Image (cartoon, rainbow, N blue to C red; front, side, top):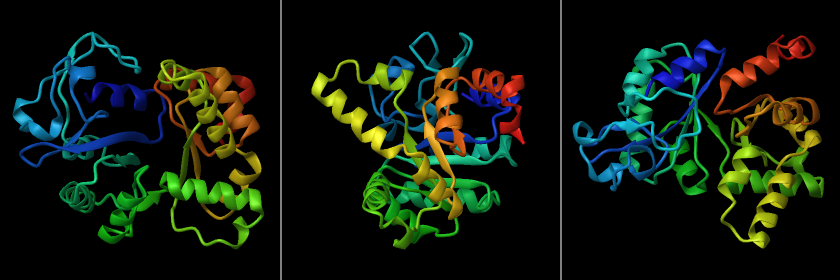
Length: 260
């Protein structure tokens, strides 16, 4: 599963974003989902299977990123660190698992990556555990913290509130949002849309950036979305499934200033 990372770096990606899980035999692996059915076409959860028994990822299954049709091995986090020793990596800790948190922190320290790694979770409970485990690693905000920042901004209180997270990462409605919410009710889709719009505000982003907190939005996959994020919101960076598209956008003549 390293080929998407390789391709992204070839196309100028400056940071890799990944999710981690723990196998039955306590190996930290890199995989987006808890289960294997979407990516490997096999029922079961990563936590219930030993690493050597994990199936390969079958890319005939619908995936968002660009790749070829080969079968790919689910990588260990340590192998990712070894392959990309100087590349910043953003880790989403999705499971509330104390051993997973300890092992990720241990690997980050073993590979001398505390200054090159962000970690965090949507879950505020998990984020609190990350702080206790290793406060030296930059942590992106939980959804609870993001909501607090947004409410504080609209109330005019944000300048007076201490912020403990080191990065602000939020979704931006776009192509992927439309795909993932297609089966939700109209009312629920509207609610999600309004919440995400409230999260994305240029003046709020500028305030966070002045306080040394970078702002990243996800998942943007076309020029219209890139344009909105950089020109209208002035974000620090975007997360995309298609780095070649982002590279083409950024290196076009009228957007070269974004690379300076």
